[in-house]
Amino acid sequence: MEWIERLNAAIEYIEEHITEEPSFEQIAKTACCSVYHFQRMFAYMADTPLSEYIRRRRMSLAAADLQSGEKVIDVALKYGYASPTAFNRAFQSIHGIAPSLARESGITLKAFPAISFKITIKGVEEMDYRIEKKEEFRIVGISMPMHRELEKNFEAVPQMWGKAAMDGTLSRLAALMEGPPMGMLGVSNSCDPAGPWKYFIAVASSKEIDSTLEEFLVPAATWAVFCGNGTNTSIQELEKRILTEWLPSSGYEYGNAPDVEVYLNADPQNAKYEVWLPVIKKQT
Image (tube, rainbow, N blue to C red; front, side, top):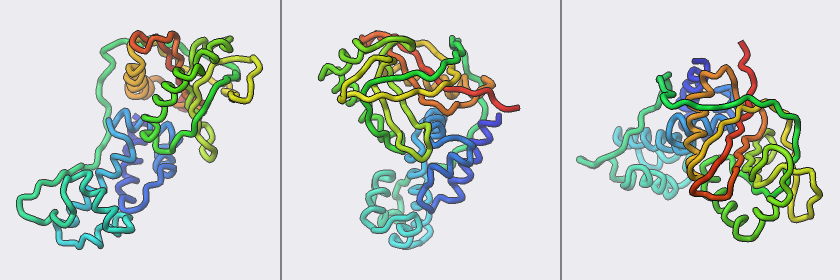
């Protein structure tokens, strides 16, 4: 219940500041959560990314303002658009028409009411997991910067995996693998709120590496580990169930450590994988 209240508090904050440039940091702070973890939880529970939700709400309210007689230039400035062109583009992407046409009789516009979260009963399918405490461990591999708006990484990460498979990087990393978690790792590091976010394709290893690879120390943490199989895209469905079904009622909260995906075989159509979620016991 506490997490649902936090989410609804964040929605209230968004509504109160809807005409301002959205601050993901402040929105997440309202929910007592990191920016990265809040965006993941929000996207899974609302079925839309946070930035897209805010954009839809702003353009929904902009349409109402235009229909009430406000000028296009005034509405554009109200919602933070420095030029009518940028506002026109954003408005058309939602409503399919130019904002200058919004007041015409018979025009169809889209309304996106503010959402609210509430508890629903789920969990018909069982979820097997284990809690594992692990000391700091070293990973070696390649990385790329992660964008602060998580959905902007959705294309870049699969492209990174594809390139790593084609240029032999995955084979090189497999030869360095030693120690748990055994498998090819996808590691999303967003532990430092002020520092850069990085995504790693890596393996756990203590072996020496050359200058084409880099290392990262995953901090000691407690992990909730979930197993799954299917395609490499079905791991996203497992992660959604973990965050929306298991975590809110588990007695745990997100811990301050990277998210880790462990790919246990190389077949993307018959994948076996684990999701390692950093957790801490919820304070009572």
